[in-house]
Image 1 (cartoon, rainbow, N blue to C red):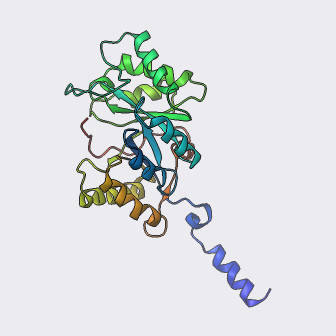
Image 2: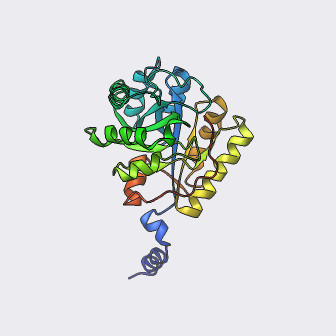
Length: 261
């Protein structure tokens, strides 16, 4: 064996495990509230990597953006409107506390059917409804029985949410939001939240963030996502990739701050 080959072999053997198996910490980034604005939605579509596209049902551009995001290799998520504590209008397709089981399930199923390529669901608003085990049990029954068994992500708009717990009890693949990127939609705050996401992923091995198609959020992500690997040592992954890596849908890191509706 010549010296150069021997040196290369030694260097390879000394590589850290992360370099060989790509065990860098993973992040999932979900962009909510898509569908009302076409240009903003297409900026999300064009972000590098498997950013998750969460679309409001029956919004003007939801179906088109679902097809475009899917064609770009991004997961399509139903951003399911749910009743909020503050009485705010949660929008078309909302589910509410006064619905019976049949009404509730029919509305969720109609919303799912309105979007092509749906593979997951998270809550839009919902600080009231996600506190109610009965309604969340109905939701999980719909997700579990769907032909593709949809993933559920608890947006955690209430510290008293039981949605993730009900998903796990129903054997629905589930994750939770760890960081809101743009609760304060200015560039400096969004960048701080992005760095918080980086830190959380490094400490726990993975983390899930939710943002919105605000110009400021998209500007930060357009700058930071291309640097995710080489600058921060992280991977951007899809929901199902993260679930597969966690194996038994292990609990995610503790959510930092629960956001409002």
